[in-house]
Image (cartoon, rainbow, N blue to C red; front, side, top):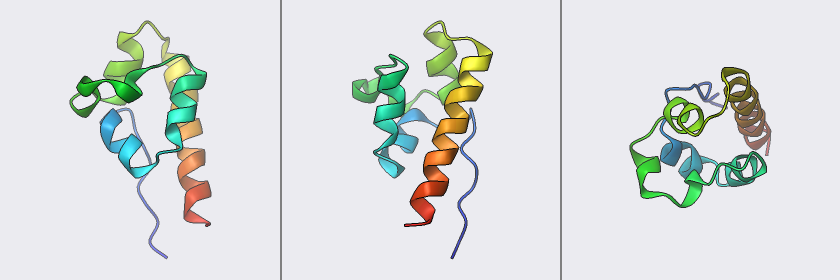
Length: 76
């Protein structure tokens, strides 16, 4: 089985949401509503999350959750 690369702060929000639709729940839990925004196609996770006033530590927490989701989806 091919292992996917780690989701980083440089991935586009839209790309992550297309690949992992369940990531919507992670974004919504943090109050990040980028999921319905057309800018998500042109904005990285870092730009979107930090640009909405979140701290670097929160960005790291979100990235960890996204990567956990990715790992879980690989085992299915």
